[in-house]
Length: 413
Image 1 (cartoon, one colour):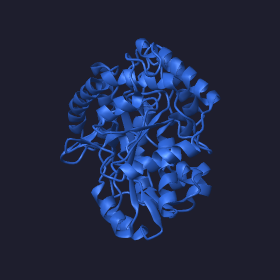
Image 2: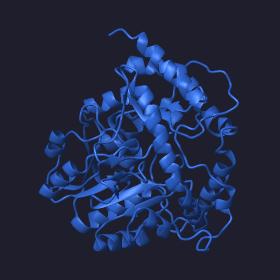
Image 3: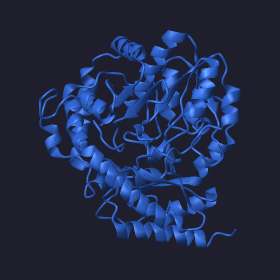
Image 4: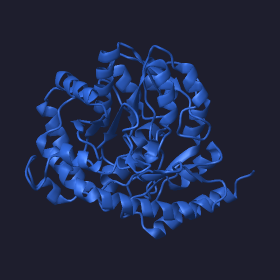
């Protein structure tokens, strides 16, 4: 990627809720902070929310519990999703089975999903990718035919709604991430939900059995959360995020640039009371922040829609997703890469989501194997993201829009 001049500010690639130092001031359970599970349950309009140390840990707990209930071993996931989903399946000793995306969509290819689902399938995991609302109805219909469960991956969609109800509750279970950049954060953290009381009890029982209390991990995450509060601001993100990003781009390592380089085993440990209290305090600001992000995204989406050749991925009718960033589909990989040469690493919050379809990560070969996923590969090769952070000013967004328009104007049809 082309070198970019140094900037005095750095825009994060996603719209994380800006931290406030007073969020750090109370211990868990105090009246000023409140209980994270209780605040999350209020926000999600449900009775009970289970708190785990990450969204991935939430998925591990759910899979382990469902495997205990049914004895089945196959988990069907989209061929384009976070690599941690594949690693969670492997962590549980289960078998991963991929399903390609529908062309140009975040949803499963319905015909292929029906073909790959049989009586061996434990769970289908549709993904509310990039805060957009996925088709859960098709997954539910197919799952019911074969006796499988549906787990909604809402890691990037805390606060998203369909027909006025929070996502995560149409399937048998759902999970959300509280990692950095996902909106509200405890640095790492996760929320696990289910409608059925018996399933909730099984999730809680499984968590008590497989999730230990690890003081070392909690101390590490607490220090990282303090660092996040110190550095998550435009004036300092160049040190914490921008410099490592540009080093990875210079050495031609896009996986490291977006942080897609994960490994086994998945860290499992309880989420400490202090970090829970930090998250509980931040929940009070989350609804207003999400509303502001949605309003900004819709304004900027309308501006981008005027450029021929750009498709901003949006929600289906009746759905209101969240907007950590705008996910753009470009006509082809060459056009996408020409844009990234101008903007990735420029400090303006332009980036990519997941670099590859799952079969194309070298470190996942033992988990995924050789599987064909042409639509997922096209999606990975033709998409980029633009931050929806409130720190991305209108004049900076205009510079991004102009760069997009310039590249697309030179494209040969």
